Every structure is written in structure tokens, then in C-alpha cells.
Length: 117
Image 1 (cartoon, rainbow, N blue to C red):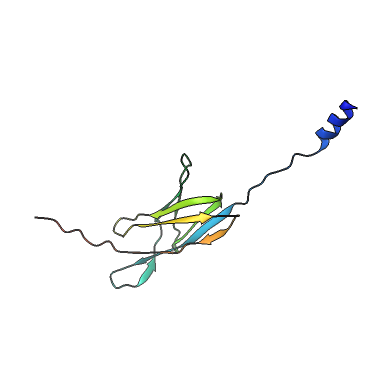
Image 2: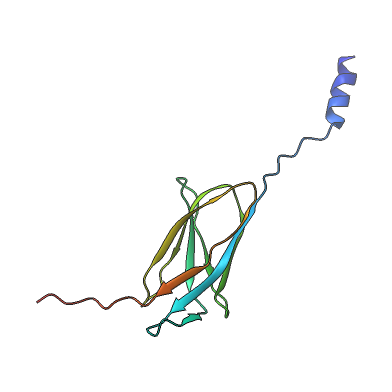
């Protein structure tokens, strides 16, 4: 009887615990001196989990200024854009239940630093 129970238990498939994964995407617009928005290719964005020990990801904007992070687990994240000559952009985002989040970003030219005399 015990052997039959073990045999039946072995045939029951293991229950899969698949966690939903989300997506974070958007467009980066650069605002120049005349305050006209434009998009830029090749800007680097960092996607960093706020949990200790988790690895950061990066994405680069395409020719239209679009970026995307796929297969994002639930949690809190820091999204950062730092491009030479532009003000830095940083925000925190919360991904839950495999949500798709759109985070468009607009960054302006950095103000020149004044030298102290």
C-alpha cells in the first residue's frame, strides 16, 4: 500500500510557481536651450533594485529615444539617467503583479558651473 501511494505521488506534477514579470519602458526627450524637445539616441539608463545584493541592469535609448527593461520582477527600483551636459534624472518605481509601466523622461541642459574666485 505504501508503495502504491509513493508511486501515485511521483506521478503528480510539481506545482509551478511562476511569478509574473513586468516591463518598464518610455521615451527620453532632451530639452535644448530654446526649450524645444528632441529625442536622443545612445543615452544610458540604469535600473537598480533597491534590495541589497541585487544586480543592476542598463539600457540604451534607440534612435527615437525609446528604452525598455523587460522581465522585471516585483519590487522597488531606482531608475537613473545621467548624460554628459544634461541635468541628471532619478526616480523610484514600484513594479507589482507583472505590471507594464511607462516612464517618459524629459531632461534639460545642465547649467554651467561658476568658478569661485
